[in-house]
Amino acid sequence: MSPDFPPGPPDPRRKPPSSFDASRQPASPRSYGKQRSSGNFRPRDPESAALIIGWHPIMEALDAGKEFQRVLIQRDEKSDRTVALLKQLRELEIPVQRVPREKMDRITQKNHQGLVAFLSPITFQPLEELISRAYESGKPPFFVALDGVTDVRNLGAIARTAECFGATALIIPASGVAPIQEDAIKSSSGALLRLPVARTSSMSEAMQTLIANGIKLVALSEKAAQPIHETPLPLPLCLILGDEEKGISSDVFHKCEMQVNLPMTGKTGSLNVSVAAGIALSHIALWKLRENGGLE
Image 1: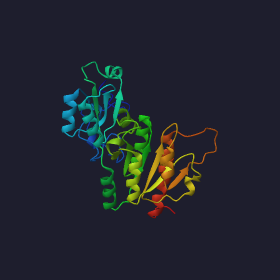
Image 2 (image 1 turned 180 degrees about the vertical axis):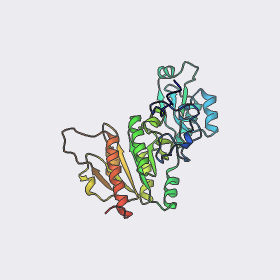
Image 3 (image 1 turned 45 degrees about the vertical axis):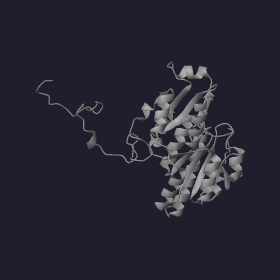
Image 4 (image 1 turned 120 degrees about the horizontal axis):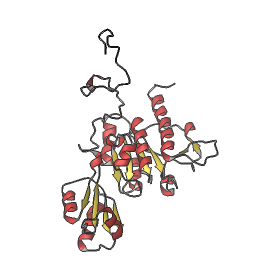
């Protein structure tokens, strides 16, 4: 550049140099990249969710108190140690699947000995403790429970919305629901690393615990007769969502104190479960504002 022409202002399209100090930029309290501190996850990258192969490594992980996502056992494995392991896994409420050897061989080419386990990228928390902590904090409990949501992206999207609207925790059954793994965490924009998750042996058991602690069960279903916008939804409550195809199971639906629907006027038969969850959670958030005097 000629010395007769002084340099102009920097081009805003250019990327900052490598010495750019990110700490000088204004922080956003809802930044997706920044994960708030929580007891919901161990200090490791969720991308490193581990596969454990064979009897000795899996037994050592159990003895060490590692958090398991699920355990796969070869279908024809019926030895005494398999029976003992199944009993231990049931007591720990760890999901188990009996699968053919061909599936095990597709997962790994190593000598799996008929046993493969997946570690969980999050630490599950007892439902009773989450309820106690919520009451002790002075905030009425507000849970979201999933009765059979099997798509990991829907699970992640629901967790993201629940965390944004201030849910106490997410409740999932040990089986019949999408696993919480890397894709679910990505779909949640990291919310699954901040929102506590309780995993229970069955939805029926979780419902009994919630009712015993004075928490109202609200089923969101197209089978319900009461429109959600006409229904008072004061806390404490638990919003229950069903699976993508069949919705909430009949047993769970009829055990809920309240059943509400989302009134629709279009020709499309139903909403995606994560979209429906977002609409319902926004209604509950409005009720919270009304109760706190923040909305006339």
